[in-house]
Length: 117
Length: 111
Image (cartoon, chains in turn brown, orange):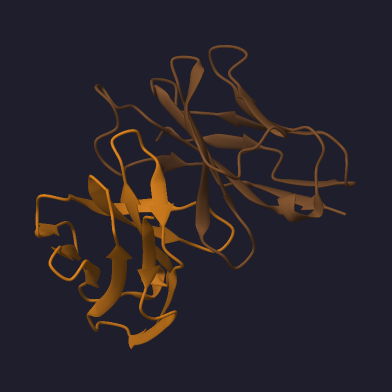
């Protein structure tokens, strides 16, 4: 069964360092997302991406965050200068959506845990 | 603004019982509502969704009910099994896949 894969599974970094989280969405999917989950809290939307541009972003997704689809398979989230409060599990998700996603069936990866010290 | 939240943080049931997990939402512009299951160390897994113009939808062992009058969503799991133990999230979604998740309910199924 196709799945969304994410790397690394866990990254520890120093405050102020740049971090890149990588995702390989399901191959025929058109819509891509990043969500995050701070430990013990709910999953929060960060950004959606379609047709090589950001469709929507949340207030969390400030200038320190960026996304990119550098080739036909990878989808990355970059945090330029990490802060302590960026420590969370980051989930990549994708969906096919012929004319826009019409259901909640986003396929999530297993997450990348980011720890900022 | 839009928010989605849960009534109860934990639910314990015996194997074979039916489980009902509840969720409230407020001022929602969601086109649909979804239930996700999250097992420890894994990403959310889609269970079932319901469009905002429906009031009931059934899947395999699961039923979602939507009451727009009181802005309430529930997930019913029939014949709950130990493998159903997980955190269950409700979420509201828009046409472009932006999901607003609730806080989560921990379901524990005792053998």
